[in-house]
Amino acid sequence: MTSSKTSTTDPRLEQIAALLAKGSDTRDRVAVAAGSDLADFLADDGKRRQSLQGFEDVYADIVHYIIRSTDRIWDGDAGTELIKTHYAPEVPLHTSEGTTYGRAALIEMTKGAKRAYPGIYLQAEDVVWSGNDRDGFHTSHRITHIGRNDGPSVYGSATGRSFRRAAVAHCFVRQNRIVEEWLARDELALVRALGLDELALAESLGTAEAAARGSLVGETTPPPASELSAPASAEEDLVISMFRDVWSERRLGDLPGYYDSDAYVSTATNRVLIGPGGYLQYVVDWQNEFSDVSLRVDHTMSNKRAGGEIVTTRWWIEGTHDGEHRYGQPTGRRIRILGFSHDLVVDRRIVAEWTVFDEFGLLKQIYAKEPPAAN
Image 1 (cartoon, helix red, strand yellow):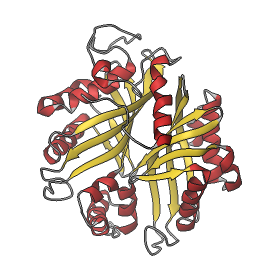
Image 2: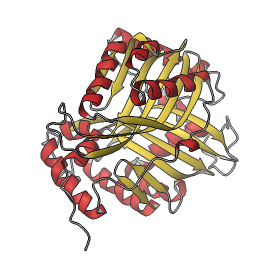
Image 3: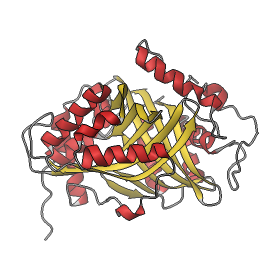
Image 4: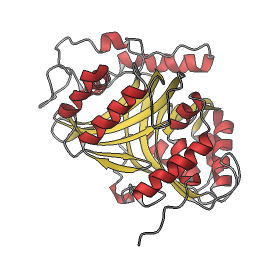
């Protein structure tokens, strides 16, 4: 097992890694993944660090449960059977493409991924959590998938190419079982790593999936705004305000007040933005291509760290593809994408942000052919 620490020569990333590495000094009583050596973190020492009524004895706390159970499930063919004890029978899985129900579907999806990417390794980057073993836990697990395409996948024959793909899984957990999950993976990074024609593939796969659904966009919809609970910390309030002010209310002049002067922002398909200027251009590009773009947060939580506070948000972005930029000529299509952001806030400024959404799913919504009308 490798360490979750990032190896880099980028001075800014080294500073951020140093902040996160203070996780061992966290004011949170539960261990955190960031900055921890995973070999030690996953050790089964039999010591509970948190009340976990109804959970297997192997788990020390909710963060350990998320990382350790993920590692066990993805460890060879036998691990897939653990889905039966770690997921509710009718668990809903929400993605940008809609909702699937039941652990049987999860088992088949996991088996398919293991056939396509044998030996795939899911490296834990961080876990942010809230809740308790009475009411249930929310967890946001930021992961890097590392593997090689040595078997047939939904994208075709094996390519033999290696890849790295970011992902975030948000789970609601009760008594050792995930009872609801929201998932986004950086799928376009994978498609590009495999050397595939992303636009042709988006059209063919998007058309087939839309025909199966009977619609271009899946049925998953954001909950009413009233369901978003009040921020639990000043840092959560800051991040929620940033999304509202900058993305939805288009107060772009407010953006520099939210981000550190050399903030590091990692977003979909391996894009890196530096500072408020880099982030501002990114937002402007979205607004130019989707004139009515809006982003709404439907869940937030945070954990204190010695280096600051990590805030996670689960959000939906919607808009009409009516402008020309990275996605080609305007199509007039409506898009709706599920995404996640993990923001490191220090002294009332965002110093780092990791955002994950399925940009290939967005391409499929734009390029898929309309499904035939029902008779």
